[in-house]
Length: 172
Image (cartoon, rainbow, N blue to C red; front, top):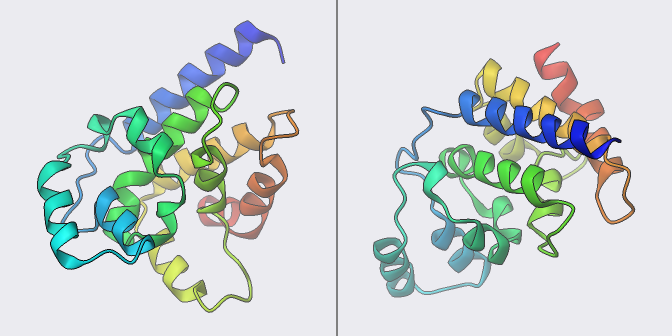
């Protein structure tokens, strides 16, 4: 893909994501450090301290370095926390997939895959159903963009599978 076209596509997609998720607030759902502590089997006292120190009213306020350093936590969020944090991870992925070594790029894609035979299938569906039609359309655009990325280190195949197994049908 031509670099100028790719950069324009990125900017357009980031704007689409930001618009679709512009009014999303975390309505009592888990936050980044809640999920990280759950992943690390943290204690409740640690969770309280983390919440107090890292509280974001809007997903747009989450710094990129936080996303870079907390790659695997998307799978630990409850539906409200997932809906709140996913756009930040998608935006980060679109902006930095070609220059970041963070596994957050891969996890943003993996978190949108619906596994047919998984004990977590119902939990995953519950999270996916929390998205509006406009948000689902932004997710589809994100997955289509990532499926079209021609790089070996990007999960293009997984992005296409996520589209085929759930997201294309959701907005179709």
